[in-house]
Image (cartoon, rainbow, N blue to C red):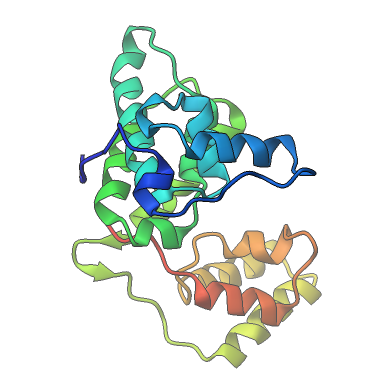
Length: 214
């Protein structure tokens, strides 16, 4: 692993934050998270890790532990080993900023999930999205993109939103747009966002995107 895991310590000990008792009207999830933060992280089960990671709790310490578990499960899968789907989903759906700050760990995770099979539809979709993100960065540096101004990009996105274009022409415009930004799923921002985004919002999100550094 890229870092030593202090399994005998709790998150309270590792991050130095003591949350105290939850409020009297706290939800069961909040109460559970408080309880798990007091336990040695090495005693946390995969489903408990998945819940904490899904809430972005203790990521600097729990992600390395989760990646280690997934790596070991991936090695055992050909012999009929169990793969924890909730843990996979929680880990691969962390934001690109999380993985950009941890390139070595992202590389380990990439190696673990690449070989996984028999995933559910939603697990496979998120694993593929993570792998797509991780391929954007290569050893030579950031992928070169065509230089276009924000205004030009907004006009292009607005055209795709408003015009009933022939399929071939629409495809050409989409490919040109993809070559102008780093975001791997800009068409999802255009066509499938809920609530629907304005052209300016699509462009701003695409320009703000930073891929995983490997």
